[in-house]
Length: 74
Image (tube, rainbow, N blue to C red; front, side, top):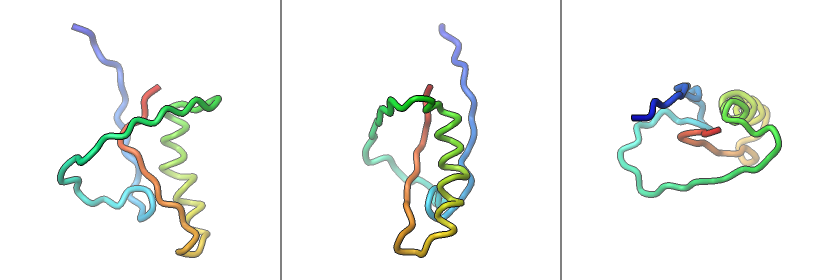
C-alpha cells in the first residue's frame, strides 16, 4: 500500500471565494492544469485565501471576481 503525504488546509469563508454553504452533491468535476512558473499548491491556496478576497474587498460589487477550488495538487 502507498502512503499518501498531504496537508489539509481550508480557505477562509468569504463571499467571493468560499461561501461556507454545505455542498449537497457533486454535479461535475473539472480538472484545470495550470503550467505557470511557481504555481504551487501553497501559492494557489494563498491566492484564494487572502489575495483574491483582499482585492475583492476593495472593489465595487459589480467588479468583484468570484472563484474557488476544492483541491490543489503539486
